Length: 108
Image (cartoon, rainbow, N blue to C red; front, side, top):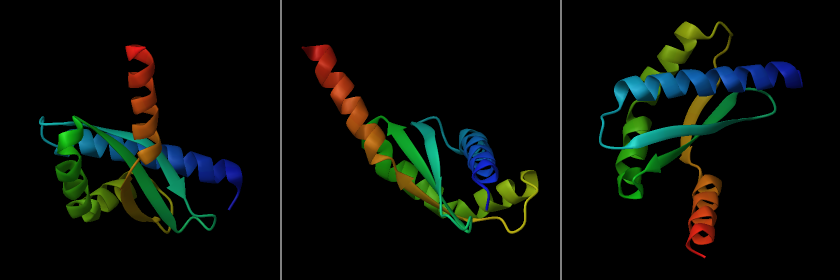
């Protein structure tokens, strides 16, 4: 799969996942799609998220995991590629670390 096509698909999945999550998730937390990782063959995409407040992270992760089937349907309806990659979700630990560093720097 060409690198340009791969990037385009990742960006589209990121945008569609963010729209789906915004529409389906409740107002108790802010869920942000930080990036999408894709396997070299394009068969698997991992949606990386961050959640504020952090106490709601587990609930938000569970919500998205339970709704991956609906998210995949939404992506396949709006992204005209075949086959649609297998979708998974993970908490973006790198983003959490960056936020912690920012927090520490602001306090000094």
